[in-house]
Length: 367
Image 1: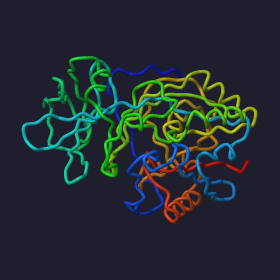
Image 2: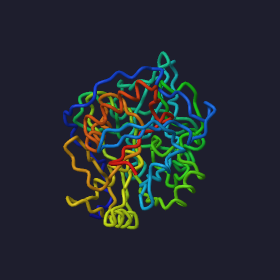
Image 3: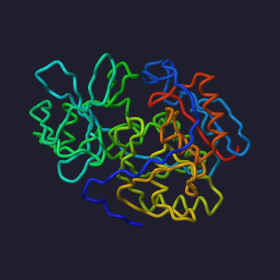
Image 4: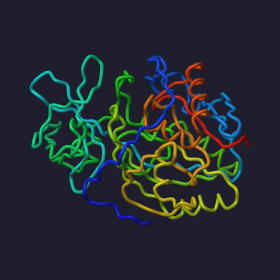
């Protein structure tokens, strides 16, 4: 299952119709600032714990995580590092546009999104055409090559070539800033969008399920006998519009991680994915018997309620918006009734959504 990373822009997979819990997200439950700005440590965000076996819900805090795990449990983390992936588009008119870099392709090409800032909202910008040049700060330029994917009647994403005066990482350090959406009212520095264990630059947006970990909490977990297994999945822009097909992302699951997961399962240990990106990567390299293999490449996997997820036993994740494919994945892990109850409780108890919000730990049974 060692699939080499392909050099052509990969095409999105199909999005299937799926039943999801219905709810409306009140604006006051959208976390608009990091917990540090609210007087909390990273690991002091709230955490709901859902047990699949008996539908029990416990309300706790993330720094209490060691109490819900046991020696031999494996936490699988995504060590992708967040980029300053947003750039201002320089124009002579008053139209405020941003270019968001999503997925790095071969050479100097990227999958990108152009968004317009209007009335305190960030919206996709569609008045684009093949060959159009977008001026960027410091003498940079993006040239739109083709819509991505080609078959979409109204494209939000494009393949673009970047012409930059320096290497892309150095350019983004100088002129870029973190991608943010309308519910975040302040432009926070990149450090607020970085997990403490992040190592390899490549994500357009933070794999935010791991944001609450601190070095101190990781030390406590390791001392308790909890194991950590790293992989990489570089996330693209997450602002999928309604009815838009998910697109592919680059992943790499190293052999030591695959071996540790398989060993944990053979010894009745529990494997807990830290984030939906981890689930997607592991499911891509798992066989029908749940054996995880090392692998690298592009995944277009969409996990639906009928998917059998044998590679993981639990999930640590945030709270997801209505109609999102992330909710579909949660149904595959825990079932409709567990997720419906959890989201009813989250709304009732005032849990916070999005990358700066609270967390949801889904486990098969209590310790």
